[in-house]
Image 1: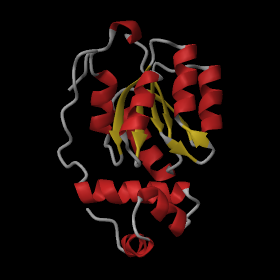
Image 2: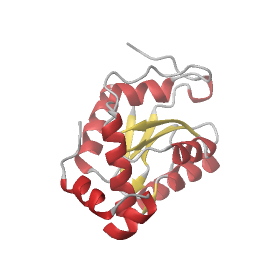
Image 3: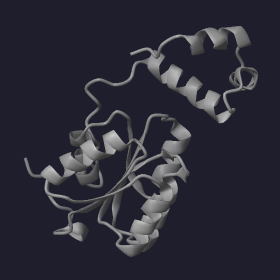
Length: 184
């Protein structure tokens, strides 16, 4: 199935993939090449920014949290270099505030990991008023809660007491949650 090209990007199938998860990055790169894209990859914000400066792509798929900063910096630079470019933000730590920020900076969609190539392709090629289909297997509410707790825990430097205070929960309750496996 071939998706319709958007008028301002017609003929240009260049895509930049930025993610610090190397195995995911390589799988997505192969999948996008199989769909007819000219793929460039980067594993850090610095590499992504360098690629945007040298050759701004028509499309980008950028991880939100990278080892050296925020993927939103890459989105912002891409929109300055090539205003018609379409970008999708991927993240394992989704929340409404970052989704709004990503869209304000020019991202066309915000997908939770793990996203497959079909989800990414649908988001990149969706028209202006077209809304993507809801995911077949969305994260459970328990998983979303667990992801949020993990994110705050990491942002607090893995300090249990500070994390518990910020989440307004008892420290022992938080310790029990952190000791368990991630829910499905």
